[in-house]
Amino acid sequence: MIVLGIETSCDETGVAIYDGKNGRLLSNALYSQIDLHAQYGGVVPELASRDHVAKLKPLVYEALAEAKITLKEIDAIAYTAMPGLVGALMVGAAFAKALAYMLDIPSVAIHHMEGHLLAPLLSEGEKPDYPYVALLVSGGHTQLIEVDGFGQYKLLGESIDDAAGEAFDKTAKLLGLPYPGGPHLAKLAEKGKPDQFELPRPMCDRPGLDFSFSGLKTAVLNTWQQSDQSDQTKADIANAFQQAVVDTIVIKCKRALKQSKVKNLVVAGGVSANKHLREKLQQLADKNSWRVFYPPMAYCTDNGAMIAIAGAYRLQHGFVDQDMSIEVKPRAPLNHT
Image (cartoon, rainbow, N blue to C red; front, side, top):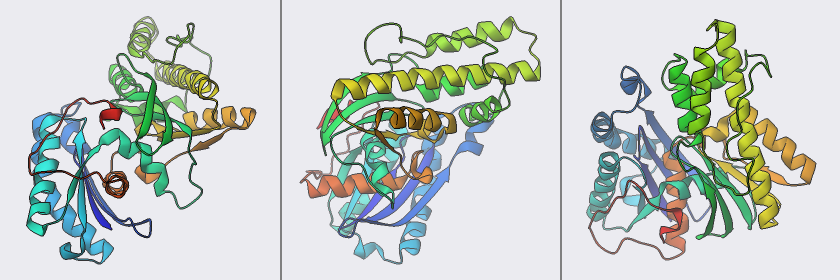
């Protein structure tokens, strides 16, 4: 089954084509709206929606050309229906539904986080076996999920305020770094000296697997305001912040793996590309004889490929839209099925 995947949950328009029968990604076209939103210091929902409208059709033809197939060879269309910006989700959902109707093929709604969860399966190398613990860490979510099989998800813990990626972006902004802040802060942290500032590891002094990064962001603000605010101090604070976030995530991952009694950890979402996080999680895995899996670097952030493969899996398990109605949700738990 050839599946066209459409991702428009936030500020990236992604279109990809996945061959479900042969387990092969045929194409992946992506357009980022970073330049559009940079002048505002963050995503402007209305502008994001309008840009998705302008870019979707050209990206579909780009993906078809890369895959060397025609629209008539598409067997089904998968699209992100939840969670995300309502207007942006509506654009992708309406486009997918209309195209599926025109081609007389099925469409299937995809949970954005399930796409991230399945993104490691796009790797050409070894893939994780069930069961495993998944760390989904992005700008909007930080979650630990026990995965016993496709569609068998148990939420172990999640962010109760700012997600890790959101905390990176907000901390970068208060330090005066450009948008999008997360990657700039991570790069600046490499120039910082370790252990120059002590920041809290939120909610690690108590049992549980939930996350909270809002207070850490406030601690950074107070530290910055009380410092000499030199370039080196800024880098040192960035280093301390990144270390605090990574330590917190590693501690929670260790707890989750021991609690679930599994040996495989899957890490996905935009923050999974963070070099320091990968190093520390690998050290944790090596020390405990665990294994850690990631998506290919190109599929860590939002993309159509993860939606296409999620669509292929859902269709194989009998999930399909029952009518032409369009339903999108800005918030939805992963176990919505």
